[in-house]
Amino acid sequence: MKLKHTHAFIFLILLILTVFSQYNTGFEATPGWHAVIYPPKYLIQMGFVILSLLFAIIGYTILTVKSADISLKSFIFHFIFTAPLVVALLFPMQSISVPPMSEAEVQNILTQTEWMERILFSLFAIGLLVFMVNFIRSFKSRSSAK
Image (cartoon, rainbow, N blue to C red; front, side, top):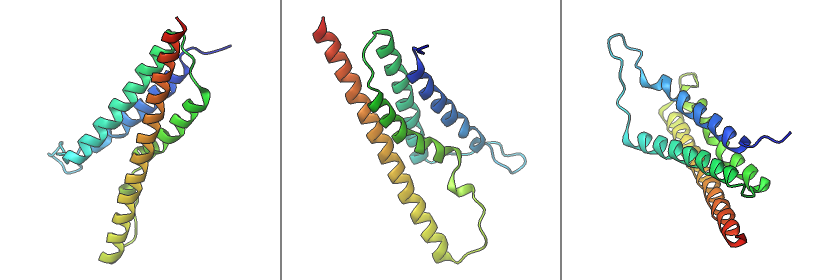
């Protein structure tokens, strides 16, 4: 039995995990204060991730409806490069409790976290580019076959 919309469904799950992983960060623990002002960098990153996942869901749905050939290799590549960022959003490194450290050790951990974030967003962007190339190729091959 072949599932038609499996590709879109998998990325829908990633989108749901991404959106609901951030739900808990929108509330402050201090009584009486129930709002957090997010920094612009965070809002831009989350907007990029959510819009990219929506684009992937819509793209895979269009390809499935149009009966275009979806390359399994590029889908797996896209998923493998996208999933680590979603997992990192689900389990942020800042929430890990650590024993008291010196200022230099804390600065070192923050630098490592920043580099990890850059690597994960780069992988995510590469996965998105692979999807876009596959999407365009599928439409070109579909239109030239007509």
